[in-house]
Length: 143
Image 1: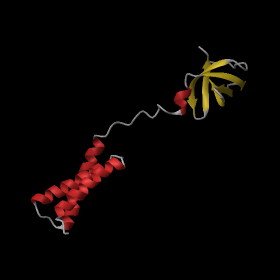
Image 2: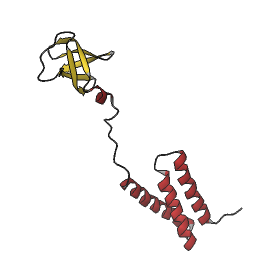
Image 3: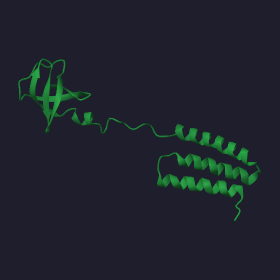
Image 4: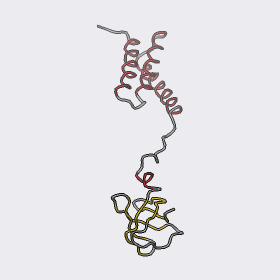
């Protein structure tokens, strides 16, 4: 069976767009639209194969550019980070030597640094996590 070129481009475009449902990544749809566009141009005009490839590549660049322009803004990456879940939690002072020491938050011990306005706490003093710097918690007085 010998299918016309425009039918092959149109089928390829549909297959790519359907593949977007199986492998979501918001990329195949733009390539599929470029293939559909190439097939539609071939419906109204005859173009040699090398120029079909150039047309497809040009349409792919255009559709991907449009897709990138209208993609949603980046989500807030701070929502599910470990640090965002620690700020505001209660901490129990284990030991401090100057501004640095260790605290317990829940069932985990953490390296800690005192906030600027906090004096060195006694062991078992209740503190509050006010920030996170890498793997070190910044703690302040319990409010």
